[in-house]
Length: 415
Image (cartoon, rainbow, N blue to C red; front, side, top):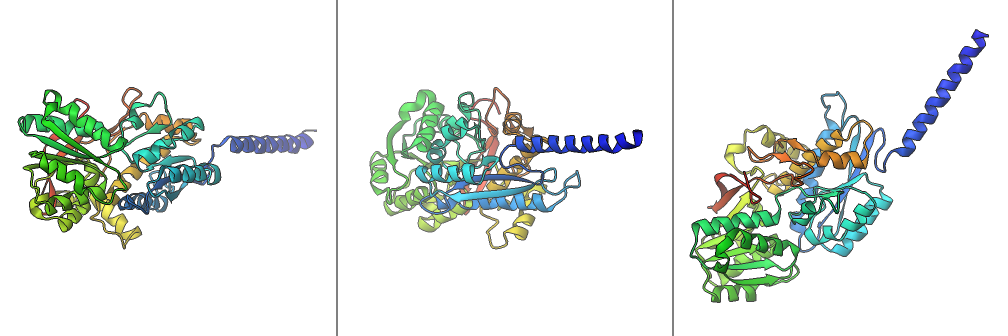
């Protein structure tokens, strides 16, 4: 009897194992198998904001590096799972963002969305994704709502310092260093630009009346001549430029054409990469662009003092290997790689049996140093603090490059 029962029991064990495995497979979230994570995002690869197209490429380079190397567990990818990165062009058009997001969720069956770019484009899909409990993580926008509304939209989180806080930093700096100077603001007339303007007013505090004129423009406008002319006519001492790269470059060019030379220029960090500022120089001149002040939280690929850091060495090596035709001096590739680093971290923290809820939990409990950020900057979140990056340094543009000055600061209080 025992000889006959042994094979019978063994068969039951095998059958039970098959059933349990099948059940576990049926419970796995979309985009997760034993061998891969399928993730995605939407970006403006064409259109008015196509200058941001390097970001998903930088992310892809880092994901490809992770897929090729063996980790401390001796496995390639994240715990043996390869990262499949799908991203689509939305042209910075919210209607296209909605369409392409549905494609990623409903056709590609992604596990999560990462890095989707643009304030209004990402606003267009917040409800859709949260209703379906699909993580919308590390959006490429500093609009405050993507972090501040975490209790209402728990599956959505930002990454970079928020625009309101950045605007607050400029306001505090202006109040302390230019207490009597008149300020004119040219801003993108949407949530993006208005976040900056509100932050500037907040930082100025009792000096808010120093803002004597504000001029808005649409991201699709082909000229800002009228707005810059009115700001010049107001005889301001300071101009604050709160726009995406193309209209920012256009503003500098218009300032040159109108021979408008305020004593101080503030420019939001989104448009303050070396690449964009060199385009501003090419379209304007050094007298117009030099002295501009902005903020930074990532290392500058063209900054000599960072050349021998582990992060910069890794960045340049992987760019040369996986994107040899791309310009590694374009900081947007590094931005993408830095963001991808944190994506990989939380995919790993989601565990051996990852779920979307575990992934979001990991995003809400980050605490580490990203090798691509300015030394001292921390990646940190908690249930009561949903802002991953809050520390920045002030930078000043001079003779073709940015220079850091001062210590790490935060527009949300503390350092």
